[in-house]
Length: 404
Image (cartoon, rainbow, N blue to C red; front, side, top):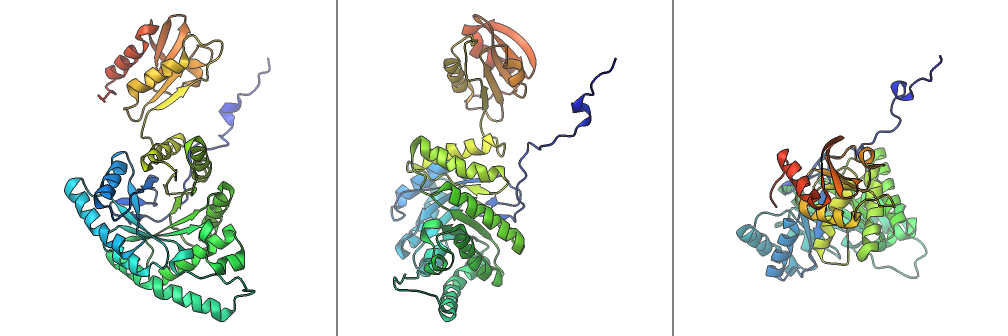
């Protein structure tokens, strides 16, 4: 009798389920490394005025304690820059070392040079670092004007580059779609191309001074623009033989559910393509609210595992218990664990199959009873009222439990 061949025995997998990250150089930001194949780094920014020393120290500590690996502070004046010296010292005295980034914008050379003494990385905005006052009557840029502005940029950037280079510190060239320089707007329009060329202009100056501790960002408040800018930046760097890590973010994403979805749409899309080495979710909320979103994005993509992965069916007419309530109970009992996959499935139809990759399974198999699984193996059946307790006992028996 003729039999059909087994396709799985002869066919090689068409798709790889692991994300292949773009190769980038490692850039040290204090004791954290961005790029170079290291885990994607989570960042955020305090919203306290940097002149408020105690408030800033407390804000930095709150972020760091919940997993923020690099913290950014705004530095709009020389006074703010000098305040970083005291902030850094108080962190060391009352808490511990935390990698800090200073955010420098308008005409920032003097501010950046001062703050570079105290922080691990300085972020500059190419569109504002040397501010070009727009002229409404302009019809063209002459080559002499372009050369003059280019020379002014080099003059103001070089001292900072030399300072960071000699201290072994880093710089982020952070382009914002909403603050491109007049030349870039005039030449390229309000486009991803203008954003990329703005970054490359600054990169070339840094490279000419033998400084390559660079991280690049291409932030925009519109996700399609953000995606296009980062993809084009990665493409242009590949063409030019550059391998700088990229900092991802959707700027001004807003708040609430939509702010989280908007940020995820931009950041996760690029990470899935292998683009991105460090991320920040920008929410109009307390900075601490950003960190769980970052880790959820990284965990969902399999890039970092920092919490329990819960697999749960959406519930249907076959479900034999209150799935939403039980999932909540399981989560509350186990959310402090790290690195486990736990499945909560409402019935036997899809349960064992859909949860095959989970470490432990909680499955409704018959009314009033729960079947507990270790991987694909059913371990025991227990009354529903004892389900969560017995799941914990199973994890403890495998020596995978830690107390909260």
